[in-house]
Length: 348
Ligand SMILES: Cc1ncc(C[n+]2csc(CCOP(=O)(O)OP(=O)(O)O)c2C)c(N)n1
Image (cartoon, rainbow, N blue to C red):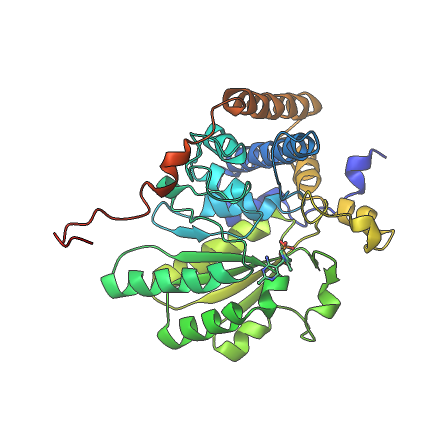
C-alpha cells in the first residue's frame, strides 16, 4: 500500500460533494489542492530560509492548509480576516500576491508593512487581511470592533477572527464572544485547534469537552469541524458566513487540526510531544487526504500531482528570488504615515 493511502479517507462520494459544492466541484477541488500544495511548498522553503539565516522568523501552517484554503475560497471580497500566526495562505488565496508576502518576510522596502512588523506577521490591506498582532487574542476583540462598525454603518461583510486553542484562554476571547453575542454582530470566531499552544496540550487548556461547546453559553451556535477535510471546512464556513451576512448573529467554528511542524522557527517539539504524534498527525494530513480522494475519484493522476508539486515549488522560488536582496526600508521612513500632518496652525 502506498503511504498516501494510509491517511484517514475523506468520507464522501462524488455525489455528496456535488450536493455540497456544486457540479463544478472537480475544478473547485483541483484549485483547492493547488493552493494547499503552494502553502506546503511555501512553509518548507521558508523554514529552510530561516535556518539559513535569510528570514528572521516563520510560523508554518503545515497541517492547517484545508482551513486556510477553504477560508480563502469561501469568503467574499467584502469580508474581513483577522489572522493569528498561521493564516497567511488565506491572504494569498484572496488575491494578495505571493511576491508581496515574500517582501514582507524579508522585511524590505517593498514589504506592505514597511518592515515594521515581525516577519510572518503580514498585512494585506487590498484583500481586507488585517495586520497580525503577536499578542495572543488581540485580534478577537479587534474583529468584534470591526463587526460593530459594519453593523453601525449597515455595510456588507462578515468579520472573521482566527485564533488557536491557546487563545481561548485569553481575556479577549471572553470579551469578544460576549460582546458579539449581546450585540448580535456579523462575526465568526474561527478557532484553529491544532491541539498545542506551543508545549501546552488541549487537555491542559480547557476542562470543556470541546472548544466549540463554549459558544453555547455565550449565546451563539458552536460547531466542531474536521479541519483537515477541506470539503467539511468549506461547507461549514459557507453556512455560517451566509447566516452572519443575513444578520443572524455570530457563530463559533472549531477546526480540529494537527500541528505538523514546530510551533515556530524558535521551538523544539521533541521536548514535549509524545513519540507517536508525528504518525497520528500524518494520517490526518489535509493535503494527502484531498490528494488521495481526488485520485480515487479520477480528478488527479500521478503525473498531475507531480506537476502541481513542481509548479508550486517554482512559484515559491521565483517569489523568493524576486524579493531577496531588495534594500531595507530607509530609516527615515519609520515615521512616515504614523503621524497626521499638523493642520491646526498651533506652534506645537
Ligand atoms: C498574551 C500572550 N501570551 C503569551 C504569548 C507567547 N505565545 C506566543 S504563541 C503562544 C501559543 C499560542 O497557541 P495557540 O493560541 O494555540 O495558537 P497556535 O500557535 O498553536 O496556532 C504563546 C503562549 C503571546 N504571544 N501573547
